[in-house]
Image 1 (cartoon, rainbow, N blue to C red):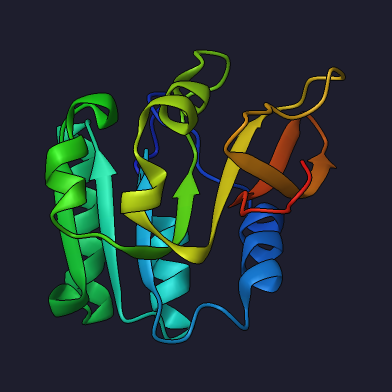
Image 2: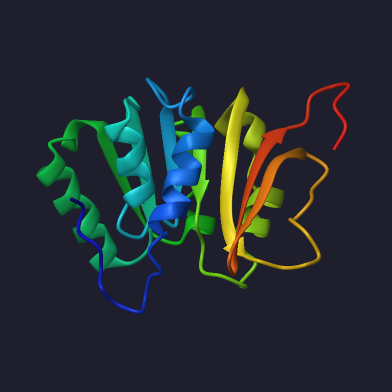
Length: 177
């Protein structure tokens, strides 16, 4: 069992949401390279590793959360499959690029701060992910729908109470949004 922070500073992903991510991506997880941005305790990345992912890069700014991720990696015996990058996600692009490309990306930013939108718009995703990769974003539910950008299509958008889980893929020539 993974340890969580137990503070108000991070919002752990609900177990039903973790299950929804894992079910949606179950066939993509084995041997995948994972990027878990705004990782918190690392629950999503560790779930992927437990289902056969090859490696997970965790991006987290909180020193307390980093310690929890490192402790969880030791407890689960997956230290060699984990890379931890500490700092603001928006400032770690160069370090993340060194570990690219990724097959799956989890983003669970603090709600209602626009951090997921900023990363979806500003990061060079064609360099960060493989062409058939997917990005999942957990955000607060808004009746206006998921965030849309010209570079991505929405594959799945589901409401879980006050939370929205949206799966994105890069648009390719001939795709419609």
